[in-house]
Length: 341
Image 1 (tube, rainbow, N blue to C red):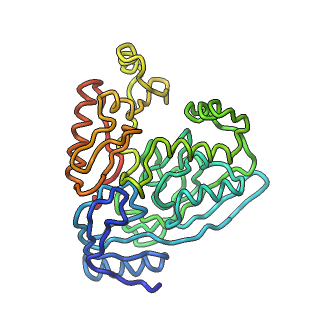
Image 2 (image 1 turned 45 degrees about the vertical axis):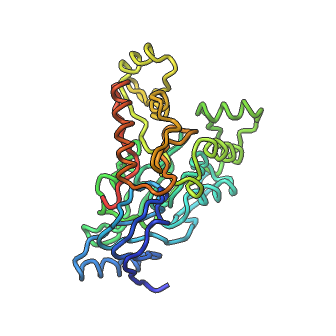
Image 3 (image 1 turned 90 degrees about the vertical axis):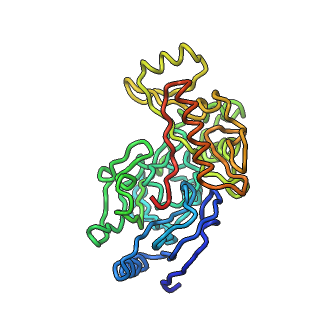
């Protein structure tokens, strides 16, 4: 497909919350050459731009000015392997879940616990996506990106990505780096790594002793489908709030007052709380009003059942944050990003 620009393009079907949205200008980016042509246009016409990936972690505005670059490049390439490891170069427009499925089918270990995370590969380093004990930073070797400041393609190592919990150099410098490829290094020899309680509970409950990579993948899919709604059925952006980290002393105080509170030790003096438990304990799970609400099976997920707007969803989010802070003295942070920023 030749590079072209559309005007007044609907983005409603391209964001998983399903809010009505229109892009002033839109370009499908299927190659690095398309990206270079897009920036020739941007510079020639002095217009702003933003990059759209899978649209699964976005709070999209009703009208998006400037040029929206939709990353749709495809391709998975083996670039290096030995008896123990294999390195894959994956184009930004590939489906993350389908990549996970591919690795599981080939018995390559490293991202199987991140099954069913929606979105595209190019967005995975931005949020440093993760689930059930694994994160992208654990397997990522390199990111290839167009540096809009330098006007050239560059390679960033794992260290240069500056990963932390749901954060990276890409997230902290919005618009500067446009990711075109991601390189992951996976294991060809299987090591059992099912130390996450929900996963172990699933195996025990279903009397599964074989914790193979395929069984882990299948278990994660079942667990996620029980907790999280399919965006194709109920519009949502996945986990709407980050799991907050608090000092051990504060957790001990909360634990004494709320014995069932859920937390995981992440450092010597730091505990990560389950935001969904906090929201649930404040009575929000299942709440619905005016086309928006809180998913009945998982309080961490805000949903859009139709006819509402982003502003109404954000009002609900603020009410939830306020009630959690008033009860637990814990601040919640919204995980999805505004689009445009």
